[in-house]
Amino acid sequence: MIALAGVALLWYTTPHGLALVNDSVNYIDGARNMLAGHGYSRILGNGDYAPVTNFPPFYSMVLAGFLLAGLDGITATWWVSILFFAFNLVLIGWLGRKVTGSALFGVLTSILFLLNESFLNFHTFALSEPVFIFTFFLCLVFLVKYLEKPVWYWIALSGLFASLAYLTRYIGIALFMTAIAALVIFLPGLKRKLRSVLFFLAGAMPAVAAWTVRNILQTGSATNRQSMWHVIPGEAIQEGVLSFWSWLLPERYNLIERFIGFWQFLLFLLLIIALAAVIILSLRFWLLKTKPGLKIQFTWIIVIQAAAYLVLLVFTIAYLDASVNFEDRILMPIYNMLLLLIVAGLYWLWTRKKWLFKAAAVFITLALMLSFVEDTMDTIKLNRSQGQGFANEYWTESQTMAELARHPDLLVYTNRPRAVNLFLDRGAYILPSRLNPSTGLPWADYEKTVSSIRQRVLDGKALLVVFDYENATSDEEGQALMQDLTEGLPLLVEYSDGIIFGYAQK
Image 1 (tube, rainbow, N blue to C red):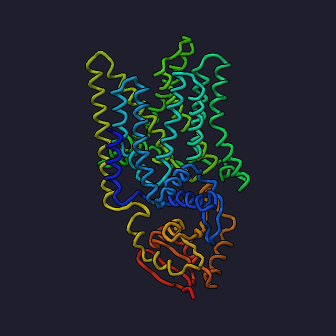
Image 2 (image 1 turned 90 degrees about the horizontal axis):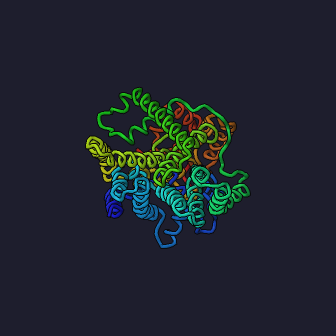
Image 3 (image 1 turned 120 degrees about the vertical axis):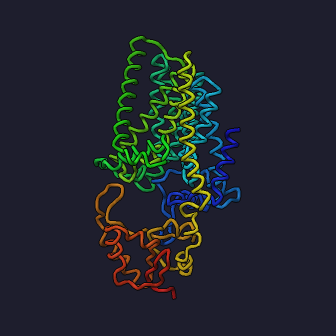
């Protein structure tokens, strides 16, 4: 019933369809190209196809299944979100029941997730989150099933869904760390530990190995990431703090932004307390040589997963990809684990004999519900009022896009190549930037690229299209880039939503 309520809520929230962003187009394009026989690829500005490695393929594969059923790409993303939202509410309820041993608190877990703004919000985007959460949860479900009843196929299935999580978002590799750690810690006997890990890897490695070999053969890189150490800026850490408290607390009255220093201190204190609790409890189990029950084991799995994900995320930002940040979308798997731990804590309070503990459990539950609902209502209102991202009428009724459609044979250089790809089903080249977002360092061939673009526009072979020109030149870097690119170029048309430089197609 809660899953059906979730379907109704998401249906009501998205009358304009899902929010469409650049990554959405990459996934839709990948699904289209697979079915068209081009493999998992993206269309280039000249109409050729290049293999995709930086976006893993499983979400596009799921979309392709819906395309085979006759749906268009945008509608397919909506149905995926609807169905997987229902699946995920069921799965999180099952996990809540396992961590507490209570059917009532399993239901409570599903309700809290249904009311939570982050959980709903990222099912309103045409992104990989619904499928990632589904594979993420199922990996944990089968891991718990194996600890309950150690039959080989349960742990092999856990490995399979860990690999599918990795093939949906690369950071799903954290599930490998969690599962292996849980098997080593909680299973008795070296032989049994080793056999269980091998069964897990037998389920996990074929798909991961096939994808990795494919990428290396196609592009020479496993994930299209450049390795380089760099310091994580303080602004990124502060964004993570804001994201966490915005998830937990209501955003009314700007209480979070106004007291950011206090929230940073409080979060640091909570992390220290959590670390101390983990160390003390670990020593207790080790010294007493006691095997924890299944509920305690699963609680530890949740803690391990949250820690493994956070450590891997910090490593990714510091070493592999500086463009990743501590935003809600990236932190959501940690929030899911934290909410499961909160439910476990509520169950512990509820089962104490003193009425004061039960009252505290009820108060915290109601406070969480009210906090979540307040933010969720804002998300519902925003999505119902207008489409988000490329689904907004700014894009669906764009004069600049309509003008660009009149010149199908010219190359296109633009700050929104994915929008061109989505609406006109043609390739476009992205405008250069002075800095590489993955490394934070200047592009070596920036001036050469700018010169090449300008020459092609002057030769009548290409158009330079800048959507939302005012916003594109709102800072010094944008102004400098536009001056480098457009100075002396002929202005073809200028609309409220964009500008096109170049000559009309003959």
